[in-house]
Length: 158
Image 1: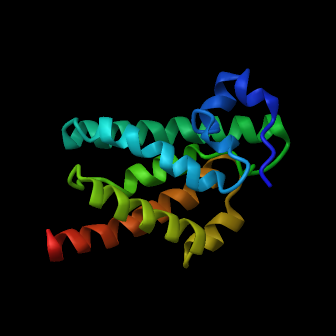
Image 2: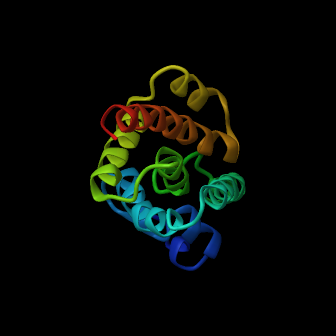
Image 3: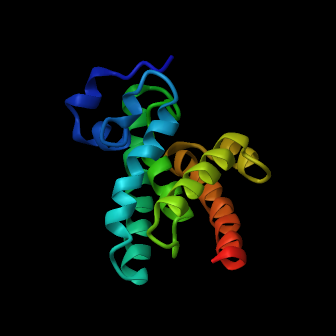
């Protein structure tokens, strides 16, 4: 059971790291965090590809600090409720994907599968890289794997 600290609702850094509060869900916070990333993806996807990539890169860089700071404040490495990394991982999954509910759903499913399964090299990275970068990096890799599969599906069926 995910126990979100009260600081999520008082501290803007924690609120962002907890995915605008979505990571405070008592069960499956990573899934709820990814779900909360979908409407923001829809807004970001209205921008040109270079702007989308810049926003995603900025979210990654800021996320290293947000997640690291929140993790240190809570005294827990990669607290289950820290889901800013899920936001960024989903946005990576959805790079250059058509804005359509079926692709959003496929991207959601693929990202969650890779994030939970953690195939090589994701699991070793998750275990060996610490701090804010470590929190972010496994989801970035899961997003990259999911993006490759999604782009393959787009190429095949798109």
